[in-house]
Image 1 (spheres, helix red, strand yellow):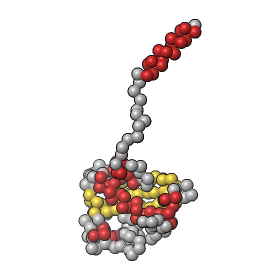
Image 2: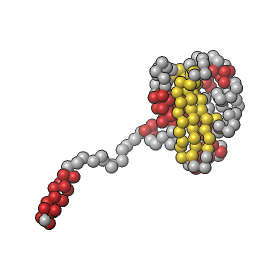
Image 3: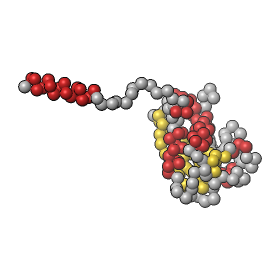
Image 4: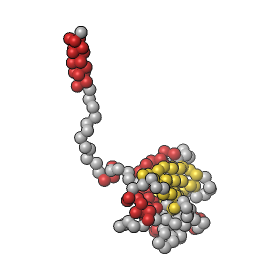
Length: 183
């Protein structure tokens, strides 16, 4: 009996040694492939995947500064940084992102940025030739930041795509929200 058990164990070990397991060696990654700390790469991918079929890639869009859900006239370094990173990530997804700070007819509030979720939203997109605006909010909790984004058709109130998710509250994110970041 012991001989059969030993033979079975040896055969099992030999079979297991033939299985190819993924390498645990670290992969060299470029800066663009590193961890998606703020979730912007995820957001861009979700916005693209959730986009209704009648609105193709290459859609000219404006990305607005993300605002505090508790006060839509308020943002932070975090809200501006999310918008900046989304411009890059959405461009990589195939969207035609329009730089609003170069458009002369757009409303930009000093020390705040372009706030699409304010009443002056129509002023912001007027003259920019955008077909959609990506607007977003965030709200900080003790453990996380909840981020919501909507891609909105500028010709109608139709929401073309949405994404909502949470990122863990880190000291870095807390500093960006409080405005104590070295940026």
